[in-house]
Image (cartoon, rainbow, N blue to C red):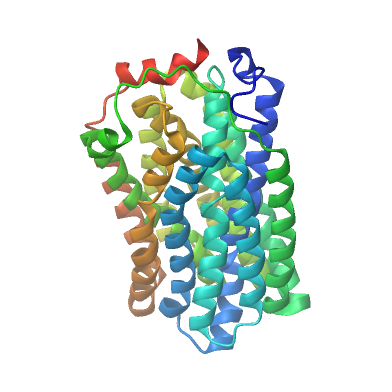
Length: 407
């Protein structure tokens, strides 16, 4: 459907049943992309064993993937702003299928870095940011709640895919599991590409160009904070199953902890929208970062499965709340104009932390034990929080821009 379509230019389409369908499609794309990438902990040990690699070298596969999708979020967002969301979704589906099929046939860790990193990286980068921009454009009054529904797909995908991957690995091996996941994930993304529609055009009073936003103090502070908090987020997805196994917990149960982080994140994602409408996005965003950083104190003193369950609940719910509020915070501070490009640029901050964070944590764990991984992750979370305090609670100019779409 054309962006210039008469019925889409009607502002009454905002917050409509059609808009909620777009939120549902965004949920599905998040489920596929992040469910697959964040199930990496289930593949970690069998792949390390198959290639004779240590933790630090094996974790590079996850780091490279996260770096690719963090950088390509800017490409996907820009593509969506210019061509509509359907094109980047088709690109994501093709890349995901090809990359995971090739990973299943890889005979060296270096080859797996490239096939998985590029395939899954493009799959996430060209689906996540474009679909969040779609949801942001289709909503005005219920944007926080809709974003919560969309990104809860990350949590549900993590909850579902990680333990399923562990079971498939038991039956098909890690190579066969990647082939199945690649084909199934691509099929879902193609269905979403057929159904997605670009948001209605907004009568947006453009106060600042995208370039001006990039150079602003607020964007730089938020960017640096996002870079640091990514280390806090990525650590359990790579190392929590291994830490649990070191405590004598069986493989499937250990892999399920990553799924439980995802389950807890759904609570945070869905529950934060109404609270943000009443208390404001930025104060709750800061609170989520604080709780996420402090959750690693639980990891430090974890003695068994029950303590690790507590960690997944605290860390997961605060992580989910933070991810849910991030797009809404960007829209509130900087407006809706070029939202796909802005989101992609912001999420590119994760590239450096994804590339360096997990290997650095793995290096510390290899030499000092898992407790050092928790210390590094918690410290990065506290530093990310401190960077947010100069930000204003709201920006009047950007609020005019963000709300202009309601007419």
